[in-house]
Length: 346
Image 1 (cartoon, rainbow, N blue to C red):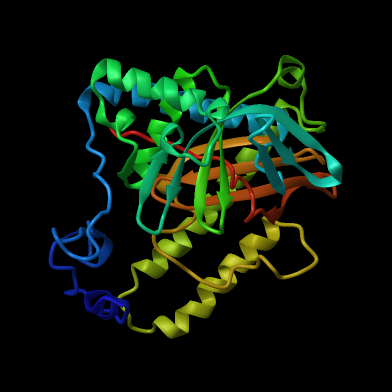
Image 2 (cartoon, rainbow, N blue to C red):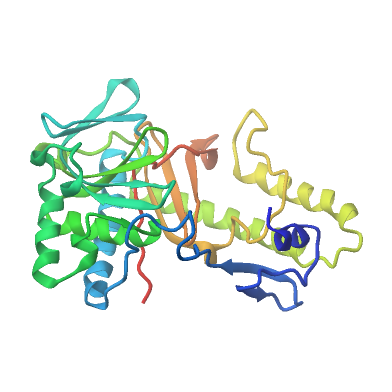
């Protein structure tokens, strides 16, 4: 562990990385530390491939493509239940992407491989440069390459490049949209490598809807319920964050008990799996930490309320009717692994 981080975790408010940005709250306590890690030139751990350099000429199109993909993600979650699939399969020979759900339900779409990302060395390889992929399933990536050659954009024409994953997501959205795809699916292979597949749903599938009992009023009410739950939990996390350290052990149990009382008013469960047992900051209940929020039907009834974090993480609640009232019944940790959520600043 970094020495400054070890000191910070034991309460040393003077601890900070040598080249980091430190944000403090109104009481002078460290609330956020941002540090950019870089590799020294010529070292054994230097990037193996050219580092992606942003091009201002792409910025407007990246923003438009990011907004488009976010909208498509929400639509597919609402209309087809994407996010709840248990597995996927992609056949290069047929070019078909198959998403597999519970009870043998499947969604089949025509797919094209855009590229792959290896987190071990932060390298992204366009599909058109990967000999492991058949040319027939690389046409969308080839269109991106052609566009890059026309405009002189290295991001679209460099075969393999070192890239921060957050900077890659808008690029994938752009390639999929420019190729005429309906969306992008992220599959994990070999335990960690991501393969990105642009997909197209045939017209009959596009018209289908998830078999759900939720209507618009129920979806709205579900989001109101979750918003109210977060609004009651947030002040408790903030109160703990603002403690000066004196008597903290004595008040900790009181704060947890207050959270438990709120939990039992909003949740309906017969076990204690999701009972609150900790306090944290930044708080998971803070709306300022969320970038994308929406509510969609659950295929088995009720609703799913999703909040995607600005920097990382997501909170996904299931809401159902219990004893004549809407209650939160679960938190879905495995939801949405196939989605990417691109954001572009500015």
